[in-house]
Image (cartoon, rainbow, N blue to C red; front, side, top):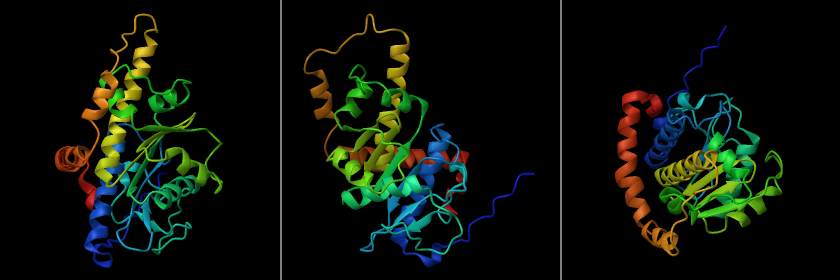
Length: 259
């Protein structure tokens, strides 16, 4: 028989308003990942730094499907992986390794989103990586770094290489593994992942028809798209336009994330 998931005790009154706002956005991101079919059972992870000087961040309880995540059920841990809040829920070891590395190594990495989608994994296994043959790939591609596969990310010494390979980029293809994005907010990380995943999906469809006859954009077009899709506009696009619309969509389909 299936075991019913016990709702997490409501903790809104135990955290700051700033932390609660991050919790709501992060829980929404988990449910949106499930809604778009990007989840991988209980595996992969999204994290967000808690406002304040303590270097704490929030991550999923390693017991929940993504569509079950709520603001209260998220687990708060420190940069060493210790739980800050009293909860029996375990945390994915690989999630801790990857996310603690980037939160510690990049002050602007407030949110980190990591997926194992079939399209993302397919492109991660291609030697040439992301190809600049679609508008979406040109929007995402100029901001993509690459990290070689070292096995399941449970070893702490990989953290240094993850951060070094990411550098100043905001998206990364983990070779033979999946995709990752960062942002100064959950909405920014989510929107970057949307573009990256759509680009990977289009590339898989494109190459499935064969390489003969592919149209390569004219010289200079990719650079033009980079200039058109870079800079501070990502904040307005993500936080001011796309995210409110995504939350309305989620409120219609799976509204329990705010609990």
